[in-house]
Length: 69
Image (cartoon, rainbow, N blue to C red; front, side):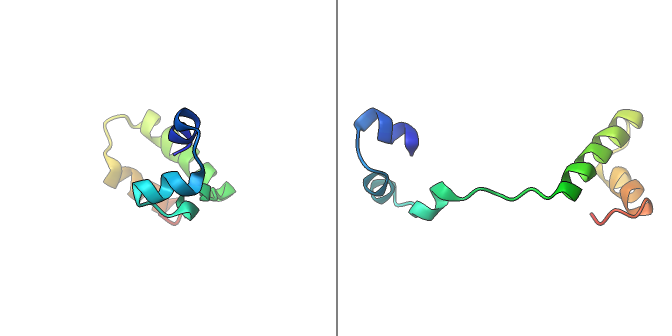
């Protein structure tokens, strides 16, 4: 949307209306919790350590360590 706004020099409202997309979608910023960042780091560590493990085994290891997955 912002690319179209810059290229055509039109408002966000007009671009969103033309694309049939709510304007609030453009302003949405997901909130990433600090615990989620630690979980991702732990997942990467386990995947690196146990390269042949799939997502189910990694999930089981995380749950065993007390993570809520």
